[in-house]
Length: 197
Image (cartoon, rainbow, N blue to C red; front, side, top):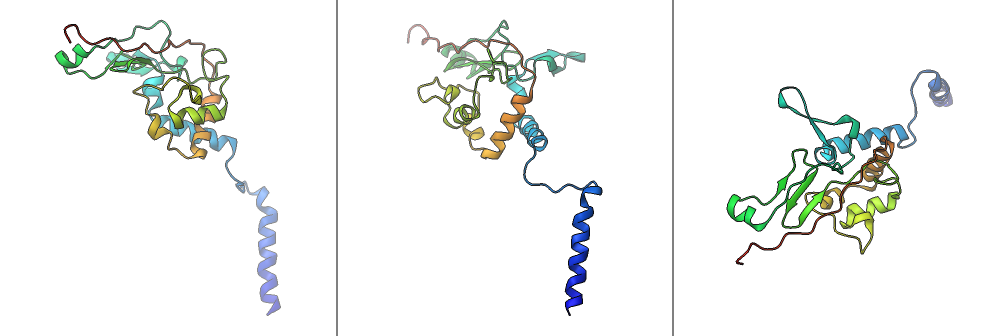
């Protein structure tokens, strides 16, 4: 009976002893590489590039991401749309966007997508992970209680519902990007009501 217990234990010990030589790795949680891959995946499926990355016109007029400015936000010198209540009344347009989807105009005014790269002067380089979490969970710029509102179309409400682990992965991925110096304009308040109203 004792022999039946010892033999399996010896086999288990042997397998554990040779494990490092087999190429197999024992995972003790999320590695930095796994976290970066998860963050990249979440940014991709979350559509962050759709608004936060400037676009170029590709072959046949196809719109392509400007890979030299990934997630760098609305270019500081790019044109942006304007909106007034007349747009809604006369054209049934609740929102307008520029061709790159990096700036949006609507009843809230004009909003510009943020520079999410780790540039210290114009991006998230001076932000902390805590400020990033707070911004996405409260809808306030830099997570400050008295900060300006994060404006449409940024879907901070559903993004803020991500798990801490997923937000940490997104943060790690954003920090791994090359910094892009791009001072995004500040939001422009809404235009007044049309004349005669």
